[in-house]
Amino acid sequence: MNHQDIRSYFEAEKSATLIILIIGGIAVLTAVVFFFLKSKMFLGAAFPLLVFGIIEIAVGYSVYTRTDKQTSDVIYSFDMNPDYLKNKELPRIQKVNSNFKVIMYVEIGLLLLSVGLIWPNYSKQNFWLGIGLGLLLQALILFVFDQIAERRALKYTEKLTQFLSDN
Image 1 (spheres, one colour):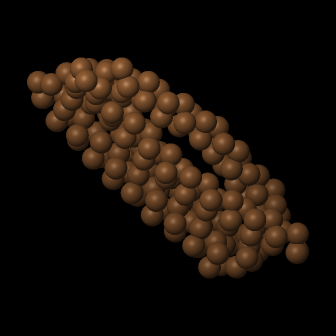
Image 2: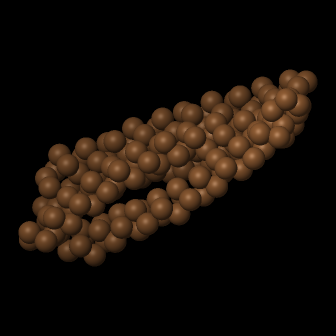
């Protein structure tokens, strides 16, 4: 592990959260437009788009704004205070990794729920179909982004663990 490994991990996190922040903004704007359309299906889709869009904006903004400080703290600790890496950074990233497992099950549940809403309402073009479609879209986006983030976090954890065991 070196400075570039640390920078690469956090820069990738920052880039991904910026994309999620933008997706959340687009989802919220789309939901607002859908609220004004006369179709019950669009009205149904507006709700999950709005709820998950707000969550994406909040999480994206939170992670995006704290990433630069985390990067500098970890790089500083890499050189000056390896105990910080052992006692703070490693437990933090291990918790992040365990949270990904819980999040994955929630997202799979949301995907199944969306299919359960879409299947019986497909030919009806109703409110519940809209909810199912909006939920499916958002759950798929989050699932893909979280799978990528989990792989990135696991690689970072592996490098961090190896560095700490070598020192």
